[in-house]
Image (cartoon, rainbow, N blue to C red; front, side, top):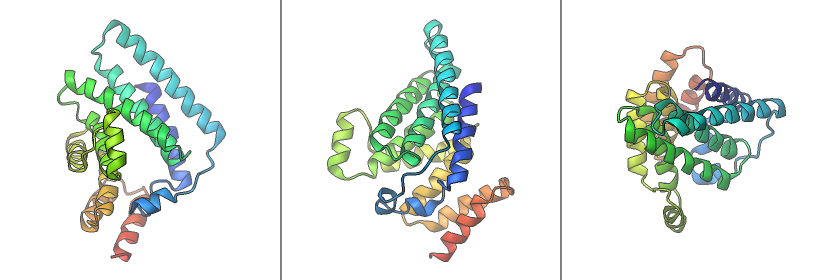
Length: 218
């Protein structure tokens, strides 16, 4: 859990520097498809990948002796999810991102099988369901054949559970929910979530900017 937490810190610092989480990039599929390919910091990228490798090595060694170790399964879930985010949102490698998304969902399901109240794991399953469920019908069918579920409503429900009951990932689940609500044309609920995040994290400048953007675009 230590190295994968380092990796998350590296990733989100890069997201902040590059302006990745501004919701207007994801208001619809066209805006997402036209997002630019960004220029990552090569030093931070190497540190991110090194932290991922260290976490995966430790987790797999733990699972070799105890296949139901909750921390190891959660670390693998986070690791794959972070790599999916890096591939899609920084490198614009959508197919690679789907590969990591599937890995994250598989690890999350394994974790939930042995820990029913590990609500943070539902972020991985929810994100996967929602993203795949938002794609065109032929693409959904192909991805479903590959083991990726398509269920927008179920994905939102999973994210809502993590937002309400998650330990580590509740704030991030609320960010993803806000983006989902914007995509579903429910800006009021998105503003409500972002306003709560602004009160909880008053030093974060992302939330007031996004609230102002959403209120100005109604």
